[in-house]
Amino acid sequence: MASERQCAANRANAKKSTGPKSRGGKMRASRNAVCHGLTAGPPNDADWLARLDKLAREIADSTGISFAHACLIADAELEVQRACEAMSILSAELYVDDASSKVWNVATASPPLPDDNICCTVLRTLKKLERYLVRAQNRRDRAVYACCGATGN
Amino acid sequence: MDRVRIPRKPSPYQLSTESAEEHDDDSRGVTAALRPQNRLEEIYAADFVRANSYSKRMQRASSALIRKNLPDALFDILIRDLACDREEAVDQVERWCRDDQPAKLQVKAILAGHRLGEHDIEGEALRRSLPELLVMEQLSASTGARRDKALAGFAFTREITARLDHEKAKSQSANQSIVSIETPKRKAG
Image (cartoon, rainbow over the protein chains, first blue to last red):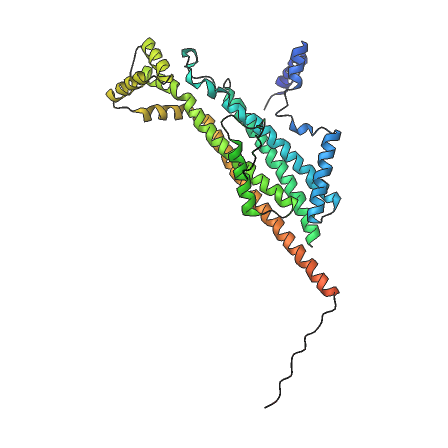
């Protein structure tokens, strides 16, 4: 555990750090916590609302559950679709180098650092997206179970 | 009369190595097998198809990754294990990558001279791509779980729908007056 003196020194040193100064640096730092951007939520525009309304109506008409419940399911399902689309686009990045596999350059022969490898970066983001997708699906399933359970009982 | 086939516009999420027909066939096969009866069931069926095609894409990505590492693996083997001259190794690998048949035979002969084969190149490429393959394997496992869960969700929805239909039919029959069928009395003796 840090002593009282060390804590004071840490606090004094922290005051010296004022963060990024340039505009580019500030912009970069503002995105430090961004993983994939999906948690920011969907665009709340007319197109999204129309899609939500259409899907909710289809669910309500075909299953007989109330429109309010159907809206909850539709909202969660659209979130699942959004995450799936993002994963699909990102997973295509894994094939970017595939076309150039016939050309080999000695400069790239040495093993690249794991963090410099584009494949590693894509895979790391894909893992985060996968986690987000599973959570979105769980949310949708919970909505389905709750609605169907309420209707069934 | 022959059916007119409308050329399908490729989806932006479709890779050049993937065929739209294969995806459509998968989707049609799943729909034919599960026969979704309402929109919720359709959603779960679509989930299943999506997870399936994503899983296939991951498998292809793993082989593409190993393929991508083959030249580096060969270079490593030539330099590290066989102690070849660097310039000679660069030349060999460059020609080997271009599918140059004499170069391929030459590499095969060099490897055979040291009791090695083309499998060793693949093995080395596999070793080099292990960290990425591990993540891909985890993603594939997760996708498999999602696919199973989609089926479980489908089964749940179907069960609930069946129960609702059954209750509806029961209440309808309760509201209607039931005409009793008189059984003919048997004569004694």
